[in-house]
Picture 1 (cartoon, rainbow, N blue to C red):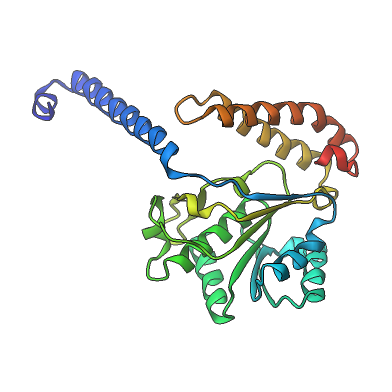
Picture 2 (cartoon, rainbow, N blue to C red):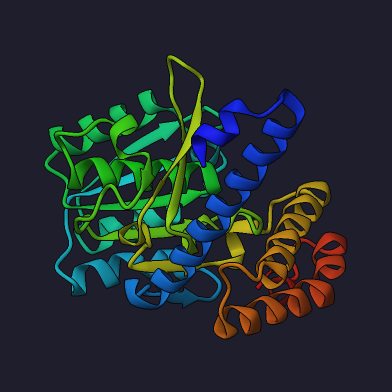
Length: 277
């Protein structure tokens, strides 16, 4: 087949190569879809409600989890969004190290800094508080902890971690990214600028804290943008017939309904916690 393709005229050869590539992609997608039923995804345990981040310290103490690396954004620390959680850690004598970032998208250098901080302070768990970028960065740090002899470029790709990561808790502060529920972490290589994903079911957080109080300060424009981002993800999940399952279809339909019924209310009144939920 490959010899025949090489001998064909340019346009015909291009069409044949396109067909071969399409066939390859469809076979790959089919294998992945079949594999989904055997990988055994675990959905994170959700802790929902206003001011729940203040009670995270009690959960960690109950689980005997100390020495936590907290990954967040510098602006969130300045706005005081992280402090209620840290106060809860102090109350239950949870030791923590705070690592903050200013980059829009996480880079390989960001991950290395976080990994070195984790090792230096002998951390035993990771808590990510922020948007998708902060959660993605924390996932990659966790992957480096699980595979300390591999750098980010060696971990990017499908199923290249394959080891248990440290206890990982994600606390999203926006509605759109959904990184707290996915198996992927998108990282930009600092030198080349290339962006690629670490894809492995082990990256799914053990716990997700959904605290609407964290979103109260979001301006209407940001609320609308992140809400529409979440809507797009829900529609994509429902219309993607290559990978989805009946369970995912039901979740996607529920998400569309929730966003439709609440996004305008949340934009008009940012303090409406029911709409924020």
